[in-house]
Amino acid sequence: MNTLATRFYLAAGIFALCGMVWGIQMSATGDHSLSPAHGHLNLIGFVAMAVFGTYYALVPSAAASKLGSAHFGLAIVSVVVLIPGIVRAISEQGEALAKIGSILAVLSMLLFLVVMIRHRKPV
Image (cartoon, rainbow, N blue to C red; front, side):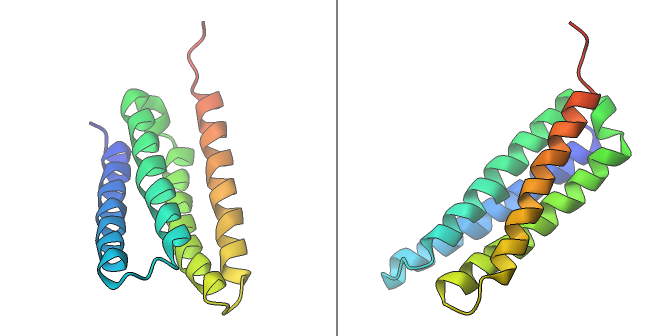
């Protein structure tokens, strides 16, 4: 498996583990007020990263591209900014970080789309 796919899978595993521990903590305390942030961590941090990793494992030319590496960096930053941003927004400490993280997540998906278009196989 190529290195980029492995990095995405490792990130997915780390984010999934964080999401699971967080979910257990919410259940143990009975406080589910941050469940939207927990859900976004699981969806973007685990599911999206795993999907990205699968694509890069199947399309080595995309994994070898500079755009692929840029995509990894942007995807990681989007999760690291978005999840605390959602927590801050729910806690009424401001929405700026959540807004920035949301834009980064959209840009990450847009970059993924560009990578897929550039490395599509002719039919």
